Image 1 (cartoon, helix red, strand yellow):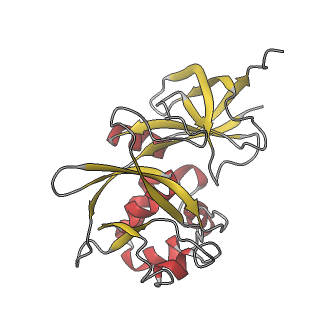
Image 2: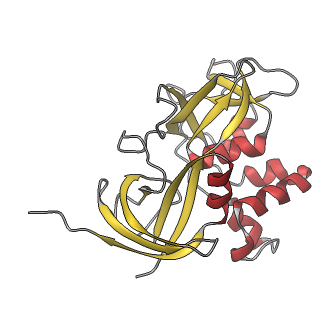
Length: 242
């Protein structure tokens, strides 16, 4: 059965440890108690969690911050050159809603046109519509600071470091975490991918047997490919030894 293969990456954002007029969008740590889970993205961005000291860092770009939430982990570059890595700690428990699907429904894009680079370009040329569109996705991610070495990938849902081009996110209700499979798929540049991958991660948008998300690593090349990768692929999962 063909599956839809997409890609994800580890983004890098400029960040500060204190807010100012430019760096005013918080990267939140997880709340305790009942005031985090259940609240929507719109409520959080309207101040529902203010005054609780949950802000880990501040960034200057709400669009890139939104995509950090989608990717689930990333690198924050501070003014002194230090790189701090952050990863998924918890969510607000709200369902994930694709803003690409929203733009398709509005007639802005066809499904094939709704790639991450195209969505970002549209958002940057329609600033008055950014907040309302992003808040269509009520799901909100809380982060933790990682102590992962710079040469390793961020931890996936298994707790092990993700490996570019080898780690995939799956629906654990369908595919057992840790499964090994042979993935074959065309790439946007015309090459064919054909190698073994390991189910090491999950994601709110990865549901059912016909979805797979390939981790592509950090950097601009990984971001570009992740934004363009939407391939009809095949995966053959190896049966466990008995």
